[in-house]
Length: 328
Image 1 (spheres, rainbow, N blue to C red):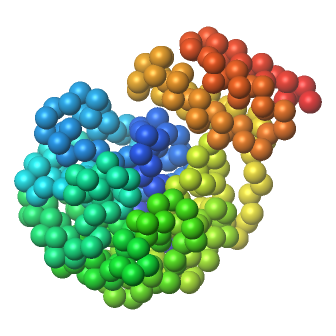
Image 2 (image 1 turned 180 degrees about the vertical axis):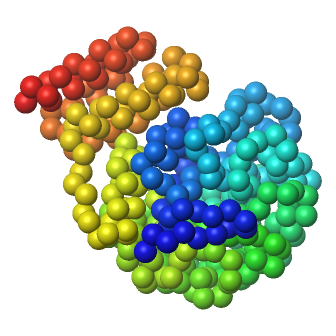
């Protein structure tokens, strides 16, 4: 079940894929997850206008560590000209393997720009936009989309066919509608329908919380890859456990609290290198809450991290809690 699959001319070693998550999937997070065995990782969505306006913060988001490949850099935008220009920049100046177009983001700020999930109502626009990007770049172009706008407007099959006809190399399907945002039960049946109607690789996304869910998705939908998002937050072991389970059926145990803190500290070091101490300490607040989730007695450490402002404070809190765990 972990046999490789191919997107364009790139071989993906296994079927476990890290989802793009806004505000989370930067290089520090991706590399940490990649080292746990992900076959493919996606970067967080990046604004086309930010790229072409040379916005420093946006361009910094294009950074890729060479150990991350294969990787898809995801862009979003509502106008063909700017989307194409941004894609050409990514094509020329980054070592991404794929250029992914976001057609799934449900938040109003993105929808108002005629981007993200707004396209789900217009298969013709999808064809027009994707074909324009495909013609303008050398790297394979992929698309991540939701199954539809709402229950009455589920055009996932038509939209995926439009992606394929436009020259798209793969499509990832998030099994919720735009109206559902991030809540509700995933509709894997629509993913199966998409897989049955296109010949390009299909990656399924939604409600994969445990390794057995990934196996079920592969069996029930026939997808080429399984995308894992929130289940990997503070828990890159989910990726390793899923790869192992698909390979051998072996159920690898959950990590210990001490092991979780080791990886949390590694993640923090990488985030400091990427964004500097001040930003890293603040961004690690949410990540630390995820890493410490479920560890008995972690409440005071989580609360203290939320007040930490310096590297020294952060390390002191985490290392002393780790020592406490080691001493039982």
